[in-house]
Amino acid sequence: MSTIKLSGMVSGMDTDTIIKQLMQVERAPLDKLHQQKQKIAWKRDEYREMNTMLSSIRTLADKLRFSNSFSKQSATSSNSSVVTATASSNASSGSYAIQVNQLASSALVTGSKTSIDSTKSTVTGGGSITITGPNGSVDVDMTSGATTYDSIIKQVNAANIGATLSFDSVNKRFMLSTAATGESATIQVTGTGVAELGFQEMSTPQTGTNASVLVNGQTMILENNAFELNGVRFDLKGVSSSAASITVARDTSSIVSQIKGFVEQYNNLVDKVNEKTKAVPSRSYLPLTDEQKENMSEKQIELWETRAKSGLLYRDDILTDTLSSLRSALVNKVEGLATISNGVKTGIDTLSDIGITFKKFTVGATSELGKLELDEAKLTDAIASNPDGVMKLFTKSSTLDKTDPNYQKEIGIAERLYSTLNTQINKVIKRIGSGSVSDAADSSQMGTQIRDLNSRIDVLKTRMQAVEDRYYKQFTAMELALQKLNSQGSWLASQLG
Image (cartoon, rainbow, N blue to C red):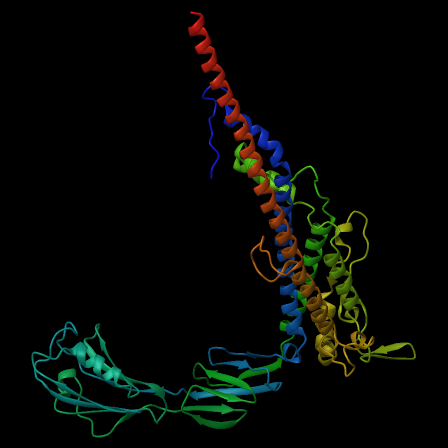
């Protein structure tokens, strides 16, 4: 049952304002809990942002774990107007001489010029027509004054016979063509209504032509303008009087690009982790309450909250451990890949062997500490001279159990990175949960904290409501007492009068 409120009816006091001011003092513990909850939600968002970066690097490391990322082949043509080539990952390195003597063509039947202005008009002579394509035939009956040329085109093309009927509106003629090329692509037109479309009765089918190409001096007859050989697809583009050269080799630029991309992403991660963990929190800037926001502009709120969010991950244990673990994975050599004889090293077992090192200390550039730097020329040379060595540096596996202390020493760089990032990402998920709601009360560490705060907030709200009701009861009692006193005073005055 709600409390009866007599707000200043007798005393003339602004009871609501007085109680509101009294409740501000009572609300202080509740505001503090809301601020704690908001900081946890903000911190969760910060962790989620970092986890996105870690997941992005993990995706790149995952690609570098497998040999197919290092075995991509590229094919280049000396004359792309004659032939182009695309190499698959299974392609063999080598070179090819391609001379195109004739391109494959489709079958084409062209009708004579007609007097038709629009395909929406109807036929005048009638009759029937049979069109036979590579995949079958279709019979079309035409009724004078009723059948439109549009309906004939639609019926033929919907039959899926491997031939397409179209109308050349520029020259006002019908044409039939096959999608397939080569001598097996055929078209034949028969029937009493062939003249209606400008065609002639055909006793034999019209055929396409085969392609004729010299591959390394050997003649090949093809029904298509493309063929595959040793994992390489060749697309014929034009006729040539001399051979075009196709060279298939390992795609070193792709490998360089992937490793370069990893170095860039890793350095971005170092910047972001340093930004988050070294920013000192502004303890005087707490999350704003609803009442505080009412007296501020949107710009003021934005500036305040930017300061309030600063330093939420100051000296964070997970993030600092992530950088330390990743650095260890990158700097340690991969066991079993190189040998030293008479002081001469043979093989590749460290990133420095391929031009990737940690930046050295430079006065005035402390923010660069912990970052990688890449000697692209040295990397390119290493890939060109020892591609398998570079591949094994990243992809090497181990027969040891994962719990063995020497397991991490034997596996490749990408394997180490992937394993380390998995561990750190799972740590973050354990702390913040896998959901996307910042203030969700779930089974994660922060979700448990929010659940506890929600319970305490509910208790305080109930207590505050009781306090507010008590204040209103007290002021109502005062109003009633004043009303009674006024009534007694009026009665006494009337008696004395």
